[in-house]
Length: 48
Image 1 (cartoon, rainbow, N blue to C red):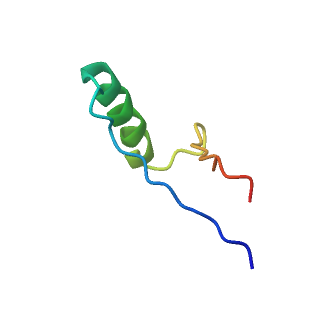
Image 2: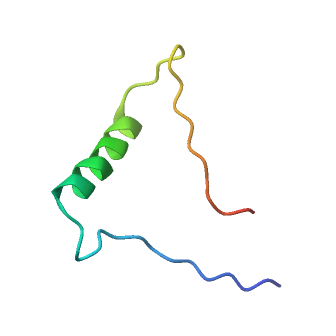
């Protein structure tokens, strides 16, 4: 059995308003209604 460590990402203490705004823009993208002409793809960064 493989032991994997899972890390959670949060806004770093040194994160500024520009960082937070960019993060919110990504989250807003995932909340959009489905549109077949403009699909949203989510890519997992873990190679599993």
